[in-house]
Length: 312
Length: 290
Image (tube, rainbow over the protein chains, first blue to last red):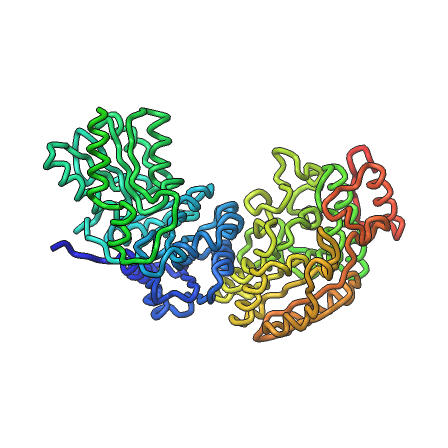
């Protein structure tokens, strides 16, 4: 049985540990510290935790001011509010002056579930990637999320980290040697490559198993960093396998698929397919039901891969 | 080099000097926002040449007081105050808005020493100032944080989010100054969006609020001094001002909110400012123009 852990729980623990070793780490919340898991940090370092109320714009601006005075602020809330609600603050107060603010969007994608489209962040990666100076990371499991949080703290400049509400399968038992902008090869293969991030990575691995039964050898990459993208890994995959499927819990426009396709087209055009949400808002439902309804499954990935193989 | 602290009458001269720069810079650039720069010239003169603890030779000094220009379109005023303080050569002022100039149309902190925040999209400066005040408290520093707000900017919801946060955190190291010139792009503030009772609003948000004539140097100095004595809450100084103050045909003339004077207007404006009383400290030489 695969162990399940949530990336936001991992974030809460990692932030607490960071706080113990670096006194410049501060945390800000917008009335969701219980959900973002920064409550752990707040309990041990109340003087370094700033509850800003349901006021995301104020939270991001305050984080910018703290960063300009040498603090390393982690501002957390649901991904939809962290990006859509406070986009101009991210742009003007953080990205443009290149301030050292870490924005953590917990509850990314449609697996927020029953709360419905108002709470589903399906545009957040596109928005964050559109901001110059921002680094954008989507960890695949709890272990990786911990390493992402540490790497984000060490990187000087704005970082957006996208986490998920439900627990996700553990992919990395030990360290994944996470490096910003360096894709992780989870499975070698010759016929086709699947590039995924977030909770779609475990589904990509399942798809690879399905494809193996059809005699298709599949390479699987954890493309945790959407910006800066690991362009070398993309070029290598295109050249070596000649076909690429991307999979993400995000809109088709402006996410991982868009980023990968640009690099493929510029360097080594090969057939591609994109597993993502198609130009629509999702509905309320259980996370797994929603993933099924909107085609974010191992079966969908495998079907796209078979289609590509028929073109080769 | 720590700043010399000027007397009230010297500050009045310095304010005229800043006004000359504003006219010269925007006139030379051919664009910019002179009206809302001129209205706050007395306030910035008081801050930069009397009130602020800052060191132009060491712009990143940890203990410096911070000034955030939330109404970023008054960039010409900020640049003039910084140049007059010695952060960069006066000549640089005439590169305003030109390609390759660090004097961007709105202030950008990574471009120019002394600029503490990148602003221009209204409503964001007070939140940034809150963060600076919180950081100072965490580090046990005694610096103060000043932020200049516009009254049109009061329409932005984020200002009130920040107002709540500042009083919630009892940020008594924070002083906001509101340039109450009563005009915004589409007209009088009272016609665009009702703001009054403005002082009562800030008091209701937990602030200590003062109202002054924003062109009375003694009143500005007194208010900023009083703000330093207030404990347990932030202070806002609502400074009643005149948009375009100092140049007869610019005063209360919305045409000069976001338009620069032409050559003739520039000469006339400079003439008016300088005839009030010769500005002793002013060494401004506009390229070929005055």
